Amino acid sequence: MSRRPVNPARRFADGGSIPFVGSVQSKTRSSPFLSIGLLGAILLIGYLHYGSGQSTSVKEAPSKVEGGSSCTLEVQRALPVLKKAYGDSMHKVLHVGPDTCSVVSKLLKEDDTQAWGVEPYDLDDADAGCKSLVHKGIVRVADIKFPLPYRAKSFSLVIVSDALDYLSPRYLNRTLPELARVSSDGVIIFSGYLGQQRAKVTELSKFGRPAKYRSSTWWIRYFVETKLEENEAAANKFEQASTKRSYKPACQVFHLRSLH
Picture: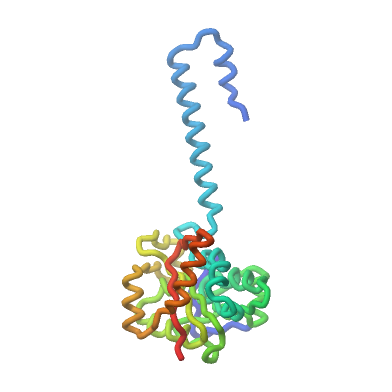
């Protein structure tokens, strides 16, 4: 899907067999060169088969996409853990980040869950299901560097993924307080790990700039400097639920308190 940062002027949208093996085996004598060639072919086939198996497992991993980890996909994988950690607070959720339609669609399938989404990039190539969410006003296209079109405490929880990694500190200073403002029970950040593969050239057209992954130390220092408090109780519950489910996040997860 091609994504571009949304134009500020329109920030809100409305809406098998091997033939030669038999012939070799039929000979009562085979030359050393032929035997070596046969052995090499078998080893090569085994290597290719093993390599093929590795490639399949990577493609099937739910939190991996071409170019690195997708924290938006990781949010979907983490939903059962988040529900255990946050309980009733998971009943009214705003997700912010690219491919938000996929997260919102999955949340809406949960019992007693209301969900909305903010897509920071244009949805020119969105599928019919996503366009329907936009048409209903459930998903909005908005530049998150500007104030969000919601009242304070409009949502119990705000979950953000694959969005803050593309913002400079200058814009983080605007965006994170906004996310905390529109939530009542906290903000959950899914961010890439420092050292993860940078965005490829083809991804620059989607996001406008390569992702800048930061260490947990950087994030914690930033939270302190901007007076954003960690939600320690929620973080502990999330860690306990993760341990019980043997869940290991592929992204960094931070739990912040809302602004009161």
